[in-house]
Length: 405
Image 1 (tube, rainbow, N blue to C red):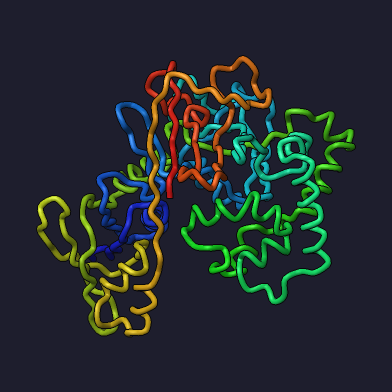
Image 2 (cartoon, one colour):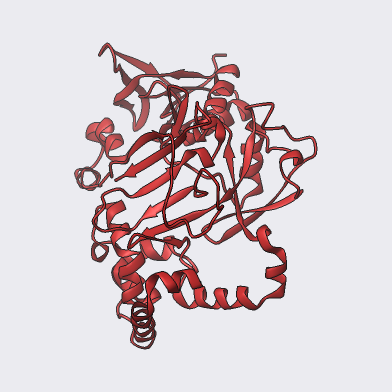
């Protein structure tokens, strides 16, 4: 019998994972259609003259052991020779997951096929000064803000606590209730609008509830006081730093490896082709018309199963007349945000306001720096040299990503 064929649109993380799982768990043969000439989608890594830059970059975090095991099966976590602690905690958005390092794990100095464990250090740049990220109540923060602004933040937060906005309809309402108007205007409003291109009073409050779970000015203050007086915390010292997982050759290395496995196991990836139309018969998808981006030539591929990871508006367009007009109307109204990352290779990188972190080091310690300045279009600075030294061709240079939205 001929095996069933699954046509998968998109060779990003979702499409590649689906193809890999089908090959491992079934007799179905996947065929992936991908517009780019490399796998990874929005999680790919671009190689420019030996300098590798992500569209992101992406930290690898999950509270699911199954997901972490899946990743580390593709790229095993570095061994103990690079870290003294056999058990570490990786974190993301106030969520935590413990991972174990093995004595037999790969050595990043001798192989590229490895997942690194990195210390995370991130700051906010606002008012031409640095602040810790996530925002925390600290002497540094109070000194940078100044006495009068601190008083305004305190009164604003107290007012929002006593007289919250009701009903909470927009993201602006949600954040003012959580942080007070002054703190909201200082650290949240401008950056959020810079990233999403939409005013906070035009974004649903539900979005804020999903993105900022468990974070509030009151909790930040309590955590700061607790950390100050807890002998347990002060004894731990540097072990309190956050950690994250990251492939040695960039985010895209993960999906480059999965793509190799998909093809090795019998799957097929058709690069530089885009979906033009989906062919339906008897209320089922029977085939897909795809087009070679370089030559313009079109052809039809048939399949038994179809999986889409493409943008919803493009999917509705490809489905054609079978999509109801009201659904098409909603799809046409979806907003997609442009993301532009500029790779900047520099010989030196110094910040006058380095707040004493790593004094004497030729490189500032940050992974990310969020630019909260309203008068600057730049949204974020990524120091790729701090993610992995293998991302930069010349170790005497610093590889920086400048993110615009």
